[in-house]
Amino acid sequence: MTSDALWLLKRQSFLIAREQVLMHLITVVNNSAPNDREIIEGITFARPTGESVQTTPSQSSKTEYIALNLELLRAGTAESQERKIENWHKELQLIRSWLSILDAALLALTPEERELVNRHFRDGKSLEVISQTPILDTVRSHSTLKRMLKTIVRKVNEVISEEEGSNILPRV
Image 1: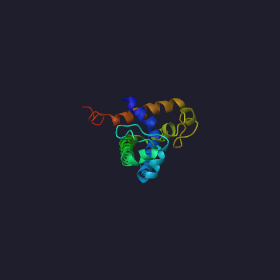
Image 2: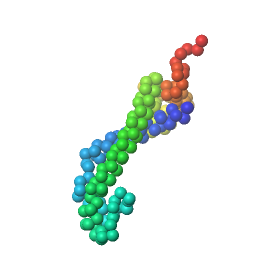
Image 3: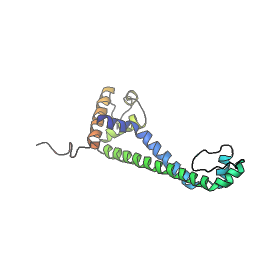
Image 4: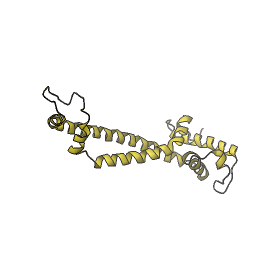
């Protein structure tokens, strides 16, 4: 399970960025339903090949093809966009769940540990660079920072563990 905590810590910047991209994509696609002109222009140079689009032996021109199949093309485009948005919403929900779990796990850390997480995982700074600058008015050695990271991963893992009451109740 330590790898789960480490994975979550390492991916937090990516997850935050992906959340923002998904929100933008959903907004853009919701606000820009394709009109007939865009559909017609989209198929002017390529004729879709699918079972949902009916063709007849008499269809010889693209204009005739578009005229006879525009309603099916509209429905297919709308359905495709709805599927995209639905998938993006699912991914967004999963990402928000992971970020929520991470935020909860970070509450178990000391301010100094949270600062180390921000510098190392979110900002991407190496332990060597971090060891040269103070963390909350204290300079830490490279080896001390490595030990702190192990403690952070252990604490985060304890919080995200799926075992009920793990490490919460005192042992008797």
